[in-house]
Length: 82
Image 1 (cartoon, helix red, strand yellow):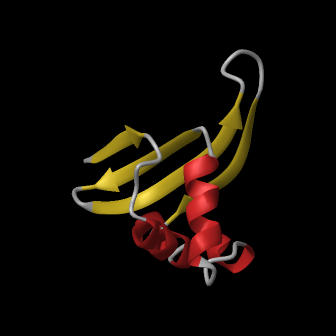
Image 2: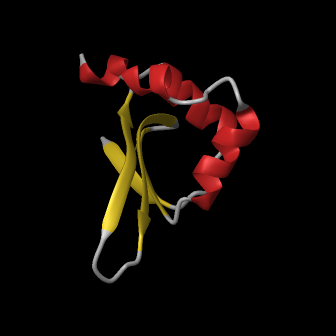
């Protein structure tokens, strides 16, 4: 069963692995660990999907929590989609 977690206190390498396992990795700076860390930790709304201890999805957004939310990333591991 998939569980969802809110928060950006995540291991950057785990997030990079998920991006690599999705098609979004081709369009994000996954070879620049520092930039990926900033992207993750400066987003103010991050929701991840987990299958046991395996991260299978992530959404990263910026929101004013009042009117607008801008979704920056939505990535799912291709293995999970099959």
